Amino acid sequence: MKKRCKNREEKNLLPFHIIKAASEGDVMAINTVLKHYEGYIISLSARKMYDESGQLHFCIDETLRRRLETKLITKILAFEAV
Image (cartoon, rainbow, N blue to C red):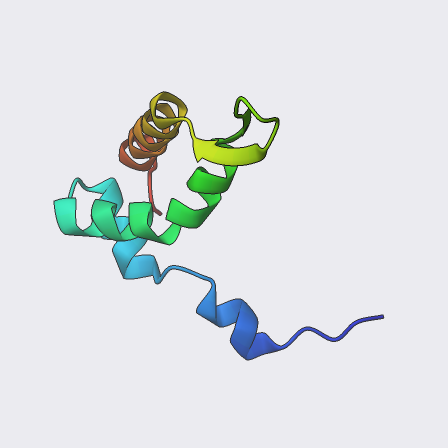
């Protein structure tokens, strides 16, 4: 069984006060949450593209990226912190 480093897990978490502020509509907190998930959103919106010579390129589907960000913002604002 692998032992997980507690410090590594804690570094990947957003502080509760930021989540609470974001759910209350604080723009800076919402931007912090978006920045936290930016890499994950980009990886979800990456698409394979082939050029004329058959070379593989990865590009970001901007429409999908914006839709994922919008969905995240919607869920943040609907979240009720207890």
